[in-house]
Length: 456
Length: 130
Image (cartoon, rainbow over all chains, first blue to last red; front, side, top):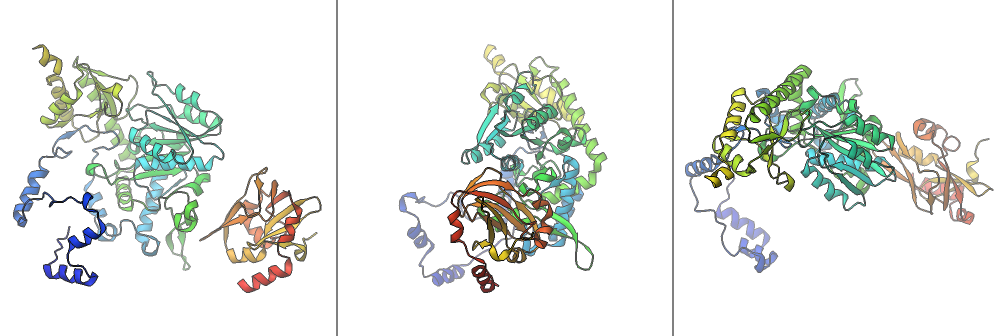
């Protein structure tokens, strides 16, 4: 980031031009005394660049990250391999400095990227149309539901499952509570079947939101849920893992009407939880309800191939408060990264990556359960993530111990559901080596546990 | 038999009304409005059975760069909707007063038609706008 300075003379000139004596005077005029901090910020003394840089390095070294530790964290954000070409292409100035261009300045190059991104998304979802991206997987899931509510007239009930990411459900709830829709959340059944969700669907249901593979890593019976929804005139919104489409059937092939996803896994780094990439695709007849931008291919008056933003009348700058959505921006730079990533992998590479995840997750399951201390909570197929129960019920201590040994072993599930206080979610991507997994199993089984300490 | 446009009534928002003796008004949008909208791409229509009052929004027409609402010029209940129209918007341009009818409304107060412009007044509005 550029270092911008301003001198006392610069400050005096700026203050003079607005007729103020000091910055404090401006603050005093606008901010009541009782909400002012009344002391300086605790930033320490001014430091030279050399000192400052080494201090920043010291602070940064305290982080445990996917580059310093073997990372088995998942829960919607994954440490997948990113080919070097992704950074190289995405960092070109033409793309990097125009990350969310508006109509007036959007270039043919950016439009072509959007078009190619959309094409790839329709290919991995098996649905006819995609937008040029949304903010993240959670906002995409909510926009998918809002879109379904607008498409199915005179129905206000939305059904979802506890196996949908809790943060996605929080976003959904926040949106729905002010628009008169009813949100019904179905508990996760012990046996993982879809009968609870299917029996909740009725003639008032506008749509069903599910996740497959779900928040706990398990595979859902999407086709059965889609059939049940369609038989009652409701739509199915499926949140999916883009990498999983290398092996699993695509949302469109399973019967989903709208597919949404977190696209971070496609060539985007973890970057502390954001910015991320919201993927959204739908059946062709729903295109007018699809929020966000859509780039289309056409020909100019000389007959050359070119690209345009199309179907803009759905958007806020034309339709105002009746727009399909308040989202009128997108994540072009991250969509570009996903486009480069998917282009580099191709169908074969995606299948290979997915297959590594599946096999390595299976190996990790077997290694972890070799210790009597751990159970795998759910039987049945998973893709790259699974729930482990710590019989010693000391998940926090266990994860802290693993971190001290250079392993981010998983995400504690008690923070989302108190009944899962003794459980954590382990994600295994293609980046984890056999050695990483063996070390994970060894560190977990050797971890001191609270009960052992107490009885000693 | 072609609809006689000189006998129609018109709303300021460019809907035409052909009030039948049976209390059913046939409603469309004028050739002038269609010309102004240019390149129509989409039309959204109400459902049969919907109750409407004067000025209520009954649907919308969309061109490449703009969306225009359709307003009901009379009060009553929608009794028929021209469902073939949205798939044949080109024909709307060629024949706005016959093929281009949009909905039929069973009027609750036929005298409301008297509040609408006659052909001459509407022509005047269009020439001033154009």
